[in-house]
Image (cartoon, rainbow, N blue to C red; front, side, top):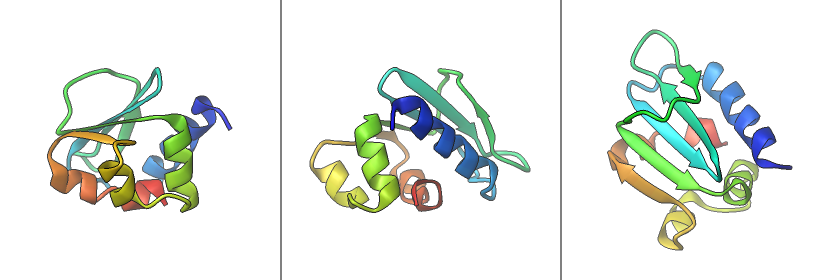
Length: 98
């Protein structure tokens, strides 16, 4: 599975999840997924704007998280995921990654 397939799965999950109440930017390899969950629904775009929380990782790591092969905390501690901004928002992302 390549990065575009992983991004498509992330988009689908964000569209089918209650609003997250914040803005989150995923930087996955060379792709950006910006989720604005401050309104009545999560709005997904490829904007590279400022977000409350930015998560930088690889498609390989994101696939392992989505499949349950990799524990999110271990990925952060192992340097496979970089989180900038509000850590509390990052902790709410389980619904988008499972």
